Image (cartoon, rainbow, N blue to C red; front, top):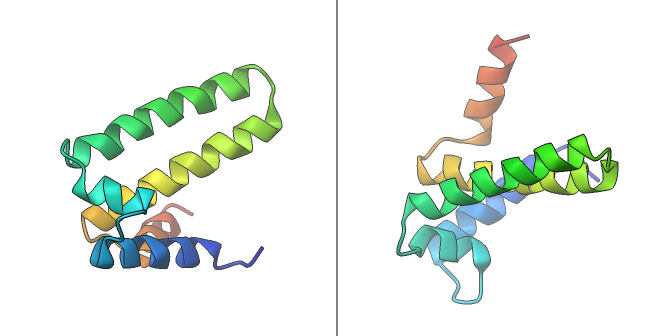
Length: 95
């Protein structure tokens, strides 16, 4: 895995946002009839699953659910034209 995997995933998300391929789950989030609420609901669902995996001590599932949260968070950022660099800058302020 490369250090810039977040950039790679975000680039794919941005491409799906721009090109909206019909067979893409990511593209469907940008065109969903619920709009942004579809992504917000997924974040809520994945957050609950993350908490349950942690409570159950299931580290493999914990990593899986964390990845789902990061993915949907990146989609939400893209919806608002917030970049991974913007996220990095904010995190750097919190060191």
